[in-house]
Length: 110
Image (cartoon, one colour):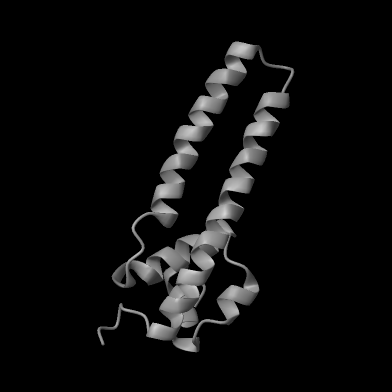
């Protein structure tokens, strides 16, 4: 098995965690949108523009984190999810030591 392709057991963990992490990410984005919308120091127009820009930026982030999950990209996807804080410690801990180590190396923590 190539070094950059994760084990089947870890792939299954990622496949289970993926939709949960996506929900956490979307919940966070919606909270960000709410904060922008409640900012009464800006005009309605300014808030509308800010929401639009926020949604565009976070849509790019969402695509980078969650689009097209493939085993060949799983380590990168896990690292992005970990850095964004949408992968729980329990989910991360259920990965093999080899995969956790690889993710930490990608994040510069290992």
